[in-house]
Length: 444
Ligand SMILES: O=P(O)(O)OC[C@H]1O[C@](O)(CO)[C@@H](O)[C@@H]1O
Ligand SMILES: [Mn+2]
Image (tube, rainbow, N blue to C red):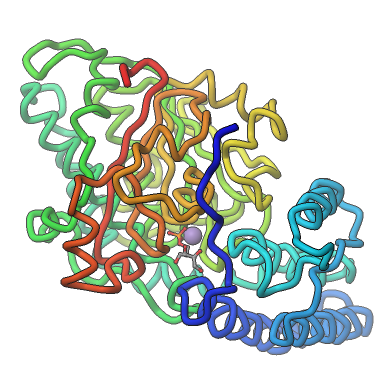
């Protein structure tokens, strides 16, 4: 039987996992409680006294949750009876079976990935159990703020895109490749701007993204962009003129600036003819503070369209058209907000796996997706990406991720050790990134 490294958990005092659960998660919960409380008047206006009672009950459930987390109590089964409740409760059973001495899984004695996802799902449960306010997005304010705080760089990349679109037909293949690499990297570095690593603090993009790409290049630890380009050009080396014109999927991460960079990249893929169709995948509930929901996705496009800036507004209008005519589509699937590693997808969400199999290339944005791709385990840094995927290969795939958790595979011998010696926090600071590719069609 194959043996895999251990999952990260909070058992190791001072580990990043431990500090996240001990410090960052309670801070996020406190902010959630505060947000719900500050919206009391809104709940009253919308639902009368029932809304106020719902607000009180939700806060009391969340305070209880924070206390259970901080005192390492057992993780409890969910009781809200919605579409994914059974999946969560079955997963708890699975965790229980893995525990030594038949102890119940608890906050600090379970895999980090599991308890972190569980906290976000429990926030949702506290709202589900209080129906008048069950659709309230506790992170909406933070996501909106991050979008508005990034207006300058958003204008800059929309202008870049529209200038490029005007001249698209005259570009040589080499020029096309250059623009492809730039916009891929803009989308990559857009992942710096998540609000979970900063426990909800402002983390928005301030500088113009295209200008800083050259300076950021040394921080890309694995760069498989050429392999991604090969897929999009049917394996032809620059100089040929073949374009794939196939289907690209983007498994989204954060709303705000990062989402705009993904939309820009998707626009480029379609307007250049490299892809004929883009399918976006988002979360079906508020998740890890800044992750994109269906509401965030459409809100962002509407805001871009309504902006008082010619090129932003033109971009937003184009994106609306792509959605209307089916060139772009948005999907959410409950699997993205389960705690499962992606190698479980084929068995636990076969419909989603089959959907991804129809794609020619799937981008996975962000750190959490990387943790799920690699099962959040303590792999050696030189282990091949394919090995860490543990059979998850629905299609050619590429992770675009800035490092914010201590898993990283596919490095050169000595690369990880050198980084650790120079900069002990290289895996969690968000300063480094990877463009990491894997394909079922690739010779290993
Ligand atoms: O938005 P991303 O890139 O998935 O990052 C989510 C963050 O949450 C974490 O799971 C830690 O809370 C890290 O992995 C990462 O910092
Ligand atoms: Mn995120």
